[in-house]
Length: 270
Image (cartoon, rainbow, N blue to C red; front, side, top):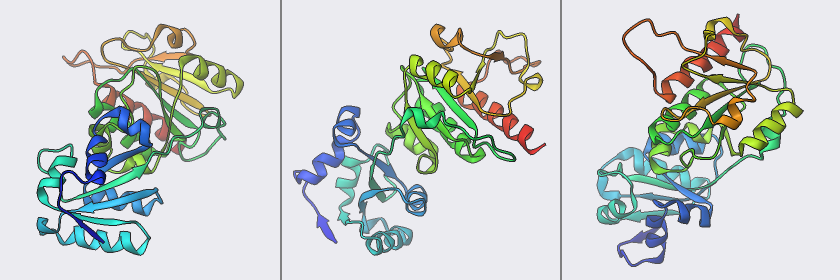
């Protein structure tokens, strides 16, 4: 284990730079904060390149996690509280961070769905232009909870590895496949592999209660401002609305996707 104290250390500078997307993409790595999330990453076999922790944080869980990382061959670095604050995206770092290798799936393989009974392995969640990190994080967490095949981000969607997205997933990003795609790719592969694209549309005349969400579907959720892109909208097999008899005019993308995902699961559970 190495103990780092200088803000000029090349490792520290490289880790701090991961707050910016261009450096994440250049290195193919991103940061995960918090004992709970990092533990989930370890349990699901994510490729953790480095574990960083603050010995002065007085959190026994951090030290235990450091021992687990060392046992699995992950390099462990002890840092001062000041350096942890420099690297972290949060105002009050939790005392533990991990540098993780990005793991994006091949888009064509994501559409090769096998019909499933009792779970959502034949469901894709397609995110079209959702810019709010908290919403995308919620969507990934809900998708992981119901066991979807994967989450696909289309153009205009916030980066999967944005620190706020990663934090909102609470470790779920390590448990579900993710990929990026263009609308053209989605339309082509959905047709090739007979995946029905079903979009959430506040103006649709059909309630999601009335639609069969079983057998190889792609649930498409657009951003709150623009909705589903025109190109993808015209290729939807069905458009569904979430009934709102109350005073609320709309739900955010995170809530809407969670409702639809659990309806898809309910239908599979019978």
